Length: 136
Image 1 (cartoon, helix red, strand yellow):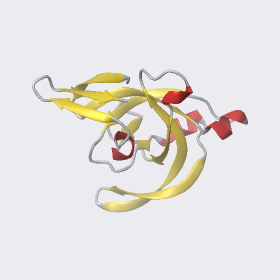
Image 2 (image 1 turned 120 degrees about the vertical axis):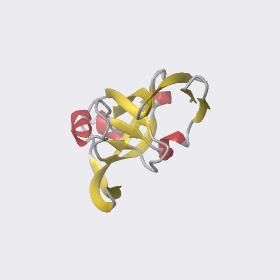
Image 3 (image 1 turned 30 degrees about the horizontal axis):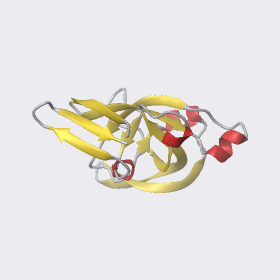
Image 4 (image 1 turned 135 degrees about the vertical axis):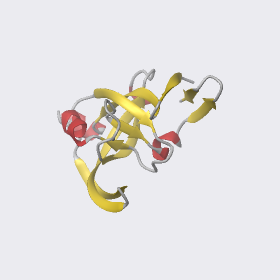
């Protein structure tokens, strides 16, 4: 089982993630794999990607979703994608996931890792060391 030890950032734990289109799109030459910084957000039910990164990866909008911003509901695009945490090798490490197109508020962060992705891993918090371990 692979793992990553994450140091806590003031906004939360950070980890590099890979993002790419679904295999069916890549076989047609659509999109490419990219990397960005992800922020673990246990308060988010869905994972989100900055719209400019979704465009950079060539993700295709698959639907729309409603998210809460400043107390109001906003309609945003959603994208079917494959995502992986650092340390995964090859195709076995990619997880299919729907990403909501909404820019994270934390500077330098391209993706929020919500509970939909966290439900696929084990997360351990070490309070005295202020660190998080993800087992995947």
